[in-house]
Length: 431
Image 1 (cartoon, one colour):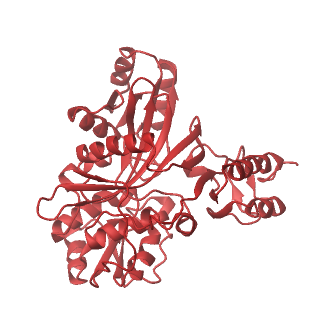
Image 2: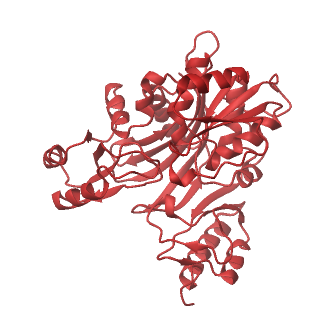
Image 3: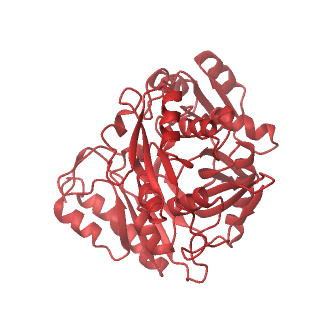
């Protein structure tokens, strides 16, 4: 394992030889891979799942413009691998969580850099993640993955504290996560989740119950590639964010300077986590809780880029972003950061919108929101009159704003203004 938090590379150096990259499940943030791949002189192929295999949230979301070809995977791995081989694909990236296992299998079949598909469960199943960390001697939440309520109740009764989290084993975006304060809560949450399809299309046959971690939450984004010759994974850390939440609701993410003590400690811990989970190549999005008198404890890792952020706004503010760094690593084999280290860093905050009830976006208040001085970009369908559902997790947030400034006071003032606009009727409530 090699850890890098400060290496930089610019577009004027090491432009790769032209090739073909395939993006598996290029949805959400992963949809931005295509432009970055083609900007580097490569062709890009999209690999999507057939509608029968694709979660409802992604059906119809693929824009084929700009791709050299679109390959539809219908479950026949041999046929899909043959199609990519005929297209002379020489690099494979997973665009979203649902693309992780397929990307790993395809890379293995084509003899391309990728994580070992035999250990794919470690990068998808939250219970398996915790087990792998404990086997590696790393701190992880006390956990049980099971398909039986009785086993979950028996396990919870033996744990200290009495506060637990029940979650799907393989979903994302806080989908289905439930905080439980006793057996009654656990039973109720189990009834809502067990064998009910989750947002990513999984059946929720198996659930994970864990101790509830209490502390400051962080997000650590990274890119990895094996070292030439030795094959030892090298990890570079693109961003570390302080993640502020109210229960399951995301409030704001504040970008931290990598030279500070906490980001450095989180990077060292996360590098060991990535090794334990078999992340040898590609991006990873890791959530960690800093628990008092205990230190860093993994919440979960996804072997894909961070979701729900404005790529262009991040690049404008910091000269880089998770997608750009992931593509550079995939095409060159070098997990180095694109940003120019000579450029003074800006303060960046990502604010998630929180709708207290169903409604529709108010035109005047939306215009006021998007005109706030530090708002530089957003994701989400933020158009006047757009229907809004009550926010219960990240997947149901109306959108996320990127705020950037040289002044922390300016960002904090706009954060307060965003919440005030929500209270005044941004979602159709009386002002």
